[in-house]
Amino acid sequence: MLDTNTQGCFLRKAAFFMVNDVTGSHRLIHYFCPMIMIYILLVINLFTFIIFGWDKRLSIKHKRRIPESTLLGVTFVGGTLGSVLGMLIFRHKISKKSFLLKFALVVLVQAGLIYWLWNTGQIQNPI
View (cartoon, rainbow, N blue to C red):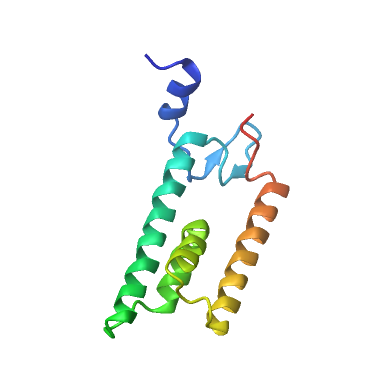
C-alpha cells in the first residue's frame, strides 16, 4: 500500500509538462515526484556512462566513433555525472582540450538554466 504522498505523486502527470496553476501562470515543472526524477536521472547518467565507455572501446579498436555532439548532447540532457565518471574511469577525452572546453560550456549552460528556472519559480522545492 502506498502512502498518500507517494500515491499522489504517481497520479500526477506533470513531471515535464506545462501545468496551469490556480493563478493562471504556466509553470514548466509545477509538480514532480522527486523519486521519479531521481530514477530518470540515474537512467540518463548510466546511459551516458555506457556511451563514453563504448566510444573509448571504439577508439581503441580504430573503428568509427560516436560523434562529440552526441556525447555532449547526452551530457546536456542530464548525463553530466555519467560523463564525468566515464571520462575519469575510461580515461576518455580527458586530454582533448577542445572537448573539455565544450563540456565546460555545457555544464555552465546547465547551471545557468537551473538557476534561471529556480529564480523564475519554474522549479519549486518539493519539501
